Amino acid sequence: MQFIVRRNPHALLLYGASGLGKRVFAESLSSLLLCQAPMKNKHCGRCRGCVLKQAGTHPDLRHVRPESSRQIKIDQIRELNRWSVQTSQQGGYKIAIIYPSEQMNVQSANAFLKVLEEPPPQTLFILVADKVLSILPTVRSRCQSLLFSVPKHTEALQWLKSQHDHTDNLAQLLIQSGGAPLEVSKLLNGDYIRLRNDVAQNMLALLSRKTNALEKAANLQKYQPIDVLKVLESFVSKAIRLSMVKEEKNISSQDEDDAPSRLLASLEVTALFQFRDQLLKAVRYLSGNSNPNPLLLIEAIFVNLSRAQIRN
Ligand SMILES: [Zn+2]
Image (cartoon, rainbow, N blue to C red):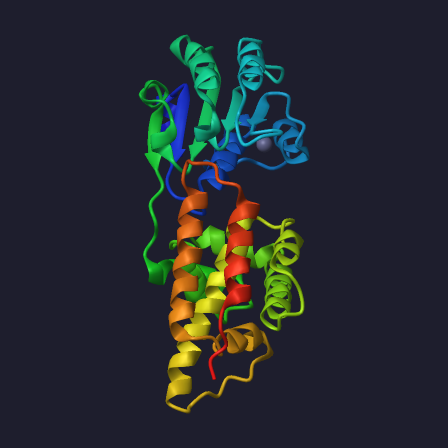
C-alpha cells in the first residue's frame, strides 16, 4: 500500500471480478489514509480519524453508490464534486469510494471527468469496478489502475477453510463463484443457509405440483437473483451427478440437504441438462450489461421446471 500513498495519485481504479477483495482493499486504504497515527502501514484503530471511520461518520470519507436505481446519477456526482473542492474537516485526506463505478451513466461519468481533469489537492477518488470496460475510457485513463486477479484454486480453498467451520462444499461453491473466495464467504456468512432452504422448499413445492411457478418465483424476490440462480444451479448439478450414479444402482446419499437434488434427479437427464443451461445463461445475462428483469428470468426458469416430466 505504501507505494500508492507515496505516488499520491488522485484517482485509483480497483478492478477485477467480484469477490476478490477490491472493496476490502478500498476500505483498508482509506482507514490508513484517514488515520492520524498510522503504524507500519496500518491504521492505529484509536485516533480520532480511526474512531470516526469505524463509526461510519468520518466527514472526509464519502461512499457513492447507486441509490434508487442501478445507476449512479448525475446529481450524486455533482454533490461529490462540490464536496471534493471543500477543505478537509480533519485536516488530512478526503476520500471518496465509488462502487460499482461502472454504474455511472454517461452524464455522471462526464461530470466526474471534470473533477478528474482538475483534481482537488489531498483528495483521493477510489473507483471500484467489477466490469472495467463499462467505464468511459476517458475516466479510466485518468486513474491509476490496479487489477485484482483470481487466486489459485488451492490457495483460495485453503484460505476459505481457515475462515469457515462449515466446509462441506467449499470447493464447489468456489467454482460456482468464479474462483472468488470472498464471494463464497459472503454466501456462507450471510443468509446462505436460509436462502438455500428457501429455494429448496419453493422448488420442492413446484416439483410436487402443489403450487404455481409465478408465486414461487415471487417468494424469492427478497434475495439477490444471482444468488438464487447459483443455488438452483448447485441443486441441478448435484441432481445430474445423482442421476448418473442412480443408473449404476449405487445411490447412497440420504443427506437431508440433498432432498431437492434427489427429487430433481427423478427428472429426465436431458431435461436436467437443459435446465442447467438455462440457469447458466440467466446467470450470464444478469452479470452482463443489458439490465434484464430478474423476476421475469426466474419466473421463466420456474415455469420450465414445473412442466418438466418425471421419468418412469
Ligand atoms: Zn488511527
